[in-house]
Image: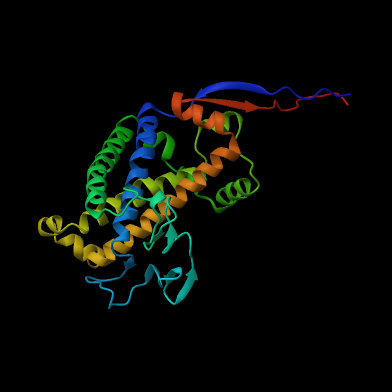
Length: 279
């Protein structure tokens, strides 16, 4: 009986210190921003395109209630969401007629002023942290060495192969696990250089003070209400990214994944290839 091939293990360096600090800081800051943002949204749970918006105007998104049921309407499609969105019960079994329930918001009770204070305070931390991370990543080589998409990776065959591997839950091992695969690179580039700056710029566009200083932002995003809609969409996409990211961490090995993001060290395992075996 042929013995099973031994699994070779090697501890390799994967995540830089700046990446690890920014990752965990963002996990906290982004969570607070999302939850306080949902409370702010509760004050007017409708989204519009253009400069102006009121309950008399057409809203492309509405999360509301009919006093007896909660619902979400996107365009002409409406879905009942009683008990979750629009209309739900609080911890004391009291009916809450707000878009998002208390367990998903900061503060848990309706308080627009407090939510704005939380949101604006952590928005500055979020923006400054992203700026610092980008500058550090530029100087320490993280962008060039880890996120740069090389010529061979641009081929459709390479991209399709990586998509199939993810669909089959086949994750990189051995020496290949030292580096980001093409799907990870595209995801991180999209989040760091497109999605997060979009969140920051659309958030600034909703500020009347910033409108006076930088009026070109309103033209760039098509009005304050359009900026609000884009801000909501970007936040939703970021939330979906985090959910998928957590699922991938769980499926690929949560202990190794979390440990590597804490220490920067990753355990790469691989089976030795068979070479010159006798029949």
